[in-house]
Image (cartoon, rainbow, N blue to C red; front, side, top):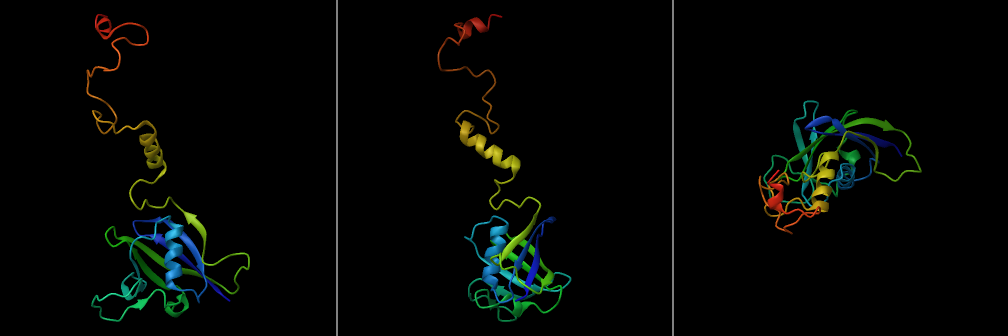
Amino acid sequence: MPVLKFRVYWEEDESVYRDIVIKPNQTFLVFHMAILQAFEFDTKHLATFFRSNDNWQRGREIILQADKEPRKVEPLLMSETTIGEAVKAPNQKFIYLYDFAKNWAFLVELIGVSKDENSKLTYPVCVRKEGLAPSQYGTKGLVGDKLVEMEEKYDLNKEGMDEDGFGEEGEEDTSDSADEFGSSNEDENNF
């Protein structure tokens, strides 16, 4: 059976993308889950695909679950629509939207067709990752992860601290009146 290779670009930065290989008889629901996994997103929110043309205009919608929203054309359901049914051109494009509150948008383009599947792979499979995936909830990234770990480890959000973890200027230490060298706070002020 042939397999299809799609490149899924993050709309905000096209240098961030994932290549996903999928069988034509697999559904858009399976593709939806593969995209979320490739970008390390959770599965808590609604999503939709749109067939698209070369100008990235939205065409027929392929929705996650049935709804009562009025549309010009009846939408297809992800769980009932196979990838092969929706691919009409050698460079077929789709727009994928996830989490309508945050409006994550991805541009999906067919970039290759292979005649034979690889028996060692379980499809769909992400075969290439380029760029750091966007953070779904705003706390991801190399610097972000380190900051989050540091906040948890040192609890920088204690009362009396500003957002950078610093106290007020001239703030006195309220623990002991003597520091580790045996001098009191009053002695320190006499230098």
